[in-house]
Structure formats: structure tokens, C-alpha cells
View (spheres, rainbow, N blue to C red):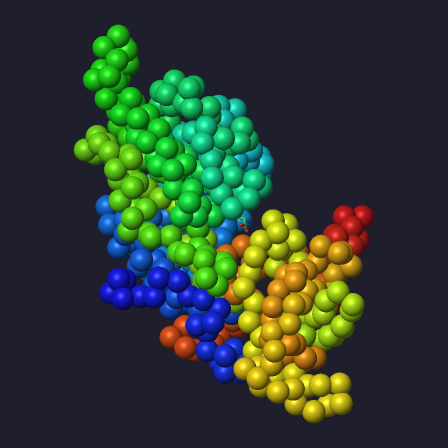
Length: 445
Ligand code: LLP
């Protein structure tokens, strides 16, 4: 049962011997994603929010094996692009489990989704601008719509991922009721939505509560208009749900406290209540489902003492895991050893080494390319394997080919069995689009 599951998986909980074996077999840099942990996290969410619809925010990890595990666990899919809808469909999400959140959607994405809606009429499009509604209607779409609201309150681990309150997202709160009623004249409006931001920690729960309370109030105003405002001469809307977004944080520091999910769920229920009978609560967590199910394995290739610190050069960088460079994000790092001294002798077991302050830097030609700075790590030796923890969310997903670096491989662990889920890119893969372009150019002429 979910309650027996460990509340968080720390990088120290991974089986070191297993990780060393995987690194030897599949080489580094290597992402390892444990599907059993993904399933546990789904169960923990479902257990904490038994009455809510739980939709997985696909952007956190789009791998096929992960999507299938999440689908089997019974969650829906919240997709941010045509590409994510395409992946969700391929992984078997269909019908009302399919949600597409359109943020300034490219025409190509709207064309694609309007097409999908013909075969999947129960999919829902979440829209945060009246222009987007017009563009959907122009494509003949008159199906299920959820109106995204800017709740005027945000939260998150960094300003770059605090969405609530950011004008880019959603219809301003004080115009939302009217916009939703207008939308209902053209579409089947089934819900309202808001998302505070990503990486909400235990100390940010007040913002979450406030967002939820505002959304509950809006839902009541829309579903039972005459109750509150006797002058309002408007029809009640048949809302199915109030989606209060995702953003549930996970601890990255080894000793950071975890969110008390049942308590968050309880606070959410209290803040939103009382909803009209027919209206459900919905949430869309991404990080919570996949973050602690993944590690990134990387090998030290250069150990350089300098007057100030020891720089440990590794084969994974900001192209593999962007979060430290982009947000200054902390990822725990564990030295799994296995390296050698400069004279070729085996370095001592990690447990016997002294903790040394190090900067772990990648192979990219940017100063910002460091996985950590001034961090105490068991004195690294060349060839040591490092495990970068809590890398299962927004890790591989944000990888790039900058500096012409092929993207890393990923293995999925399913009941202990490792399968290559994404193969390591080759140098040839780096120029595929150029070769395709040249080929097309020849054919066009
Ligand atoms: N729903 C919506 C509408 C979202 O925009 C997001 C995330 C989620 C749900 C899921 O949020 P989560 O539960 O994963 O926090 N790359 C950043 C995170 C960006 C999140 C963007 N939106 C990072 O690495 O921290």
C-alpha cells in the first residue's frame, strides 16, 4: 500500500552496485529511470487525493515507458504541445484522459489537436487567452474547453518557473468569469484551471491554499451564479472540474523535508470547499511523479586541484542536465567510486576517503556548466562514477545537443530489469536534419 512506501527516495537509497553495473554496461552519461518508483509515486498521489482526477504533466518526463506506467496507474495526461499529445496518444492515453494545455500555441499545434479531436472528441483543450479560443473556433473546434485563469498568486522554486501571477499564463482573475461564460457560448466548457508554479515547497503552502481558495470561489460563482449575486442574470455552467495545477515539490537537498502530501491534500480540500456537488477537483503533477525515480550517472575524467578548490571534470554537463545552470538548482551528488589514482592504482573505497570541497564541471565551453560548486564530496579520483540524484524530472527532457554533444542514453528499470529506453545519440545523429535538408533540396530541384 502507498502508505508503506518511503516518502522520498534519496540518492543514497539507490543500490550503488547496481548503478556501477549499469554504467559499465551502458556507458556514461546515462539516465536511469526506475518505473517501480514512478508507480509508487502515482499511488502516493492517488492515495492522498482519492476524490481528485490526477493528470500527469507529461513535460516532466516524456519517455514511452514512463508514460505507459503512468497510464496503467490510472492517471490522465496533461500535454503542453502537439508533440506531447502525440506521445500521449501513442502511449495509450485517450478519451477524457487526454488534456492539451495551449500556451500561445503555434498554428501547427492547433491544426494537429483539432484533427486529433475528431477521433478523440473527449479530449479537453485548456486555454488561457480569448485569442486562442478564436483560433480554435476558426478550425471548427467546438469540443471540450477548460479556461485557464491567472490566479494572481504564484509559487515555485525559482522565478523562472513561477507561473501564477505571470501575465503570460491565463486570463486575469477578474475577467475570468465573464470570459468563461462567453467561451461557453461556443464550446463545451468543462472546467477552470490555474497553476501556481513548479517546485512548491512546504513553506509555500499558503500560496497554494490561496490559489485553491480563489479557484473554488470562481467555480461557485460560475456553477451557482444566483446564489451569490442575486442581480446576476446568467445561466449556471455545467462545470466538471476545478484544476488547481501541479507544482508539488520534492526535496533535492539530502536532508530537506519532504512535502507532507496527505496534509497538502487536506489543505487543498479545505481551501476549495465547498464545491458544487458535480464539480471534481483535478491536479496535474509532473515532478512529483518522476523526479526521485531518476538518477544521472556520470564519470569523472579529470581531477584538477587548484589553490581554491578541486575541479572534478565529468562527462555530463548542462546539455544533459540543464537545471543547475538554468536555475542554480541543487542536485545531490554521490560519489560511487571505482576510479584510479594517477599512478594507475585503485583509489581507496569511497567510505575511506575524506570529504573534499569540489566543483563538478561538465565538458561544455561555458563557465555556467557545473553540476555543483563548493560541495563536499568523498575525495574524487579519475574514473569515479558519480550519481546525480533527483534527476528524473526535467532532466533528459531539457537536454540539448549544444557543443555538438549527442544526447545521453536512458535505461528504464522495471521490476529490476534494465531496458534501454532511449539510445545514446551518435555523432551521425547530430547532422540528420542537415542531411535531410540537403536531400530535400536535391529532390525539390
Ligand atoms: N501544469 C502546468 C500547466 C504546468 O505548466 C506545469 C509545469 C505542470 C502542471 C507541472 O508542474 P510540476 O508538478 O512538474 O512542478 N523546467 C522546470 C520546471 C518547469 C515547469 C513548467 N510547468 C524545472 O526544471 O524546475
